Length: 207
Image (cartoon, rainbow, N blue to C red; front, top):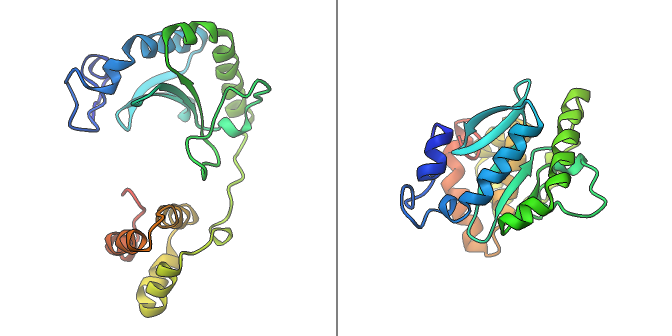
């Protein structure tokens, strides 16, 4: 993945085979992303660095927001977006199970400029959340349903069950979401089998 900001804007994030090609999504939204970056840097003293192949902005080593390029839009993602005041409903959850992150999506440079004041307000409020030490109250792993396929796998393999229960709450939650999001039973079973070794090794979903 891309390690520095300039490479990101010139060649892409490096997360897929489209890196350094005209088809890279970063190139699709280059003007909009550069405008968003300018607004971020001009309106805050956030630390800018590359994380997960994307420009990330932090306050006292706490992630605050991130730029992203997708097929149909580019976005400004707030790590604690669910705590931000949003009376105009400009922020959306990136997925139905997202509890913390919220995105501000853009499809043109005009849209970025039109919402410049809103963007600045969100950035300021997001920094204030970090200054206050605000925390997201995540659902506990035992509040998530266990897919029947995974329950059977654990019933058939006590070692797997013990290893899963020893994982941190965040790791257990990530696995349950990953398994449960699959609509087909065969897909759920396939995901479980692919993750078995990682679970037995005490690792998280993407470790």
